[in-house]
Length: 107
Length: 107
DNA sequence: TTATATTATCGTAATATTGCAATATAGAGT
DNA sequence: ACTCTATATTGCAATATTACGATAATATAA
Image 1 (cartoon, chains in turn blue, cyan, brown, orange):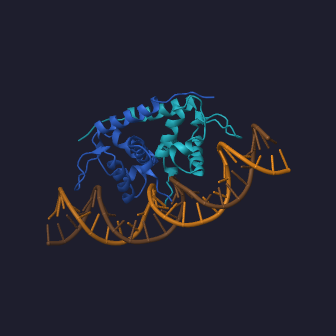
Image 2 (cartoon, chains in turn green, purple, blue, brown):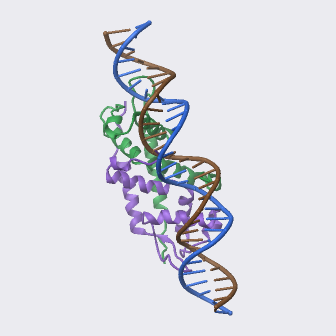
Image 3 (tube, chains in turn red, purple, blue, cyan):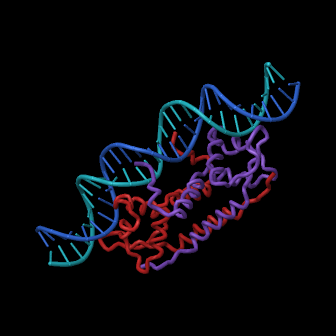
């Protein structure tokens, strides 16, 4: 197949998986770390810093945008990528809830 | 291509991405949630509960095992899957560190 | 307008993931 | 030994992801 059977899972399960999928690539981790370190959220040093081609970086940025983790102006020349604080904390909370609601009833 | 250029990223970046990849499928989220809810860490009701074929469940369990999130006895008939508490908390901490070390210097 | 710089999109190739049927393996019970 | 039950492995098809060259689009500067 190759396609996940998303319909047999709950919405929260699918949503967390979708968010995890965005974090499941070192380039996207690196991009998020880099954007956060910048004083002014400048854009395409990313191509130089990360070491991937410009279309590839653009695609990764798009994946990150899809789950709402970036905000700023995306049109024209002087772009501005930065972390969407509200969404970031929401996602942080989602992971924390997942990791906290676990029992350890082991054999 | 299709293969990530892992060599251009740092070890922590690759490790976090690898862990996120395991969580990047709703079936694996569901499996982890189910295992944790069980009083006694019993095994292959998972096939019935999740609704995927037995080989598929087995493969998902293997992915989860790879990052050390399961412990128990894995040989023979009466298997025992359960959460590896130490590893679980380690991973929870890794995500929390990642989410906490972010600035919000937006435009 | 024309050039330049920046980002997005298209097209495509290589590789990875998901899922399952068929089969193999391993232990418990008879 | 054989059977039953539970899990793993193999092989394969469908789909997704990653990456990049070529090209398009968009804004600024000259």
